[in-house]
Image (cartoon, rainbow, N blue to C red; front, side, top):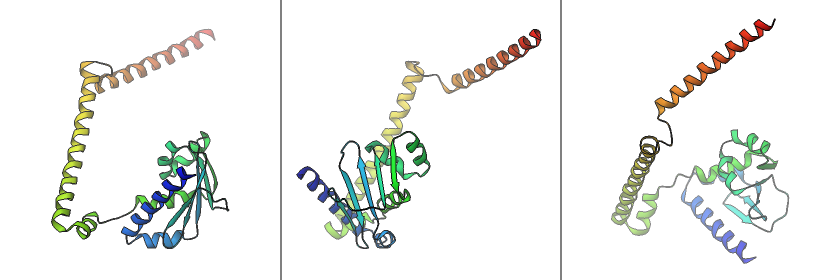
Amino acid sequence: MLWTVLPNQLLELAAQQLLALDPVSEERLAKLAGKRLRVTLKEIGKPLTVTVTEASVYMSWIESDAVDCHIMTEFAVLPELRDSANITRLIKADKLDIDGDPMLAQQLSKLFTELDIDWPEQLSQRIGDVPAQLLVSAFRRGRSRMKSMQTDGQQWLKDALVEEKQVLPAREQFIQFQSDVQALRARIDKLERELRKSRT
């Protein structure tokens, strides 16, 4: 039981702390106050119940009372639930089962994805203006460097696969291949029509 209670308490505390840092969270929480969502992940098996109040969110692994929405899915599917266009496709593919209001999960997700926390201000209140500014600048430089490295890595991989190893065709070759396939399909259609005419 400890393996579920301790992570649950830490997760709940982290969620409450994050919500407290965003002044707009109170308004969002008020709209969802009293709503309850249960999520059962196949990998875990035990359902997690999330209850929203006007002040915060609470989580429980042992609650069994009625909820407004019960989602049964896999961990890998959770990020796809942000877009309502995916819900029907996931249900048809037997990767998602929803009992209740499907929009509730998206509204709860928005509580955290739309958080607007002034991190420089929060840091300056805790460690002072100068160290906070240094940390924020270092973080921004690091993030910019990571983006640049990611872009360079993608370009290198593309060049290696297309130019050096020739595992993938270049864009022009792919377009030419598509054009050739369409031309071949048109010739086959023409031959089929001529063959039908000659038989009649």
